[in-house]
Image 1 (cartoon, rainbow, N blue to C red):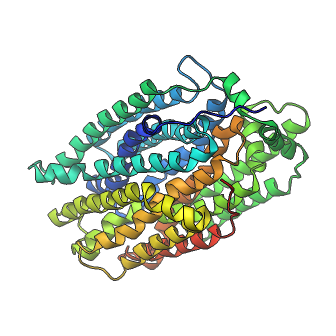
Image 2: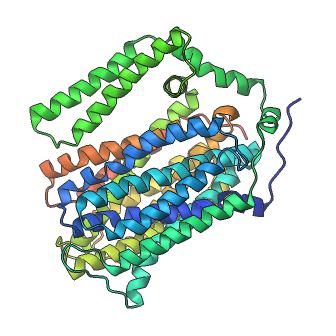
Image 3: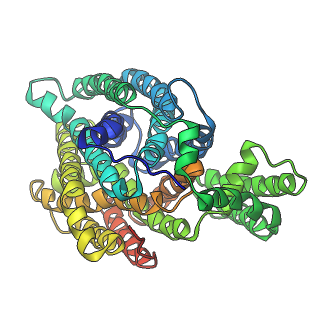
Length: 498
């Protein structure tokens, strides 16, 4: 007979996810300020996506690897918590170093390290909640995690604004980073480390023996299916990835696209080669290796995960556009400047921090109030679709609103969508995935968070340069459109049983 995990109290749920508060402070500081830092160091608007490539690329590489190994790790500290600790230490150090960068190269390299470190800590947190909670607590567990994500993002986004109000210098000499940004990163590094440490100290993890007692036959069968799928898979899909990569690389050369698009083509071709290698290893009985497991698990994703992955792809395309372009959009449309060294531009940068704090604050509230109420009445799937449409309306409103204060209304819709994006797909998935492979499947699911970011970072700069070189506001129309597509794709997902 399968054992049932004990119910967790509110404070146990609180401790499980409190570390995410600190991790999100790091992400919020990165998202709201990196374009500002790059432009302060002399980079042009149309080159911003290329510098942001580091963030999605590190997530694409790190998350499946961390997920794979965290499923197989067991130490005195547990299996997920060692990754929390290592990532928090590296991320805190990166936040200290980042605002000291004096060159674009150093800033881009530090962003790469920072994002890799945040991903090392973040990815196991998704599986950590699934590991520790019984199925009927998944929704509230991921809701509390989303609330901490929102609260951490509010704190990280408001730091520069509050420091400016306290009299700290918000404008630096040409080629420098303002003191408001510098001090915010340093404070954020300390807060990140302490929050993650809190979760490590106040929680425990179930041992491998306990996890096996909680698992059932379907769980073991589900864990074995991906490798069987890999062994019998034909080469057609792998050759298709290779061909797609080749076409993209040839298009860059033929049509003079931005050079960073080469990276997208190279990644597609690399996955095709990896698939061919993994299939060969599986057929010859040498499949107990990292490559075979990751490719096999990707090939054998459950159907519900495949459909939700399409939803994630569209959703995060919109979000990454927002993070890259909101500062130049608001500066030009609402503050009347495109000069990154002007006082008005830095004022716009601070206001974007406030706007980001608003949508994250709305998300924190919605995750604990609106989402459970809606899900109980219309189901998780329809709740997610409705919330995504609210976000699409918020992005579309940027095209007509020119009053900075009124943009707060836009952020309400975006905040509702953000709450659902962070909670509902994971609540739907956690009850449907094999517990023994929860880490790797959560890591692979997050590939569809990263891929659209990489696509936006490599392609959006070329699109903007070709069609709207001086009007970044049209990026908000793109964000509204793809979020509406995400809502439509959600309706293809079957409503899960509680």
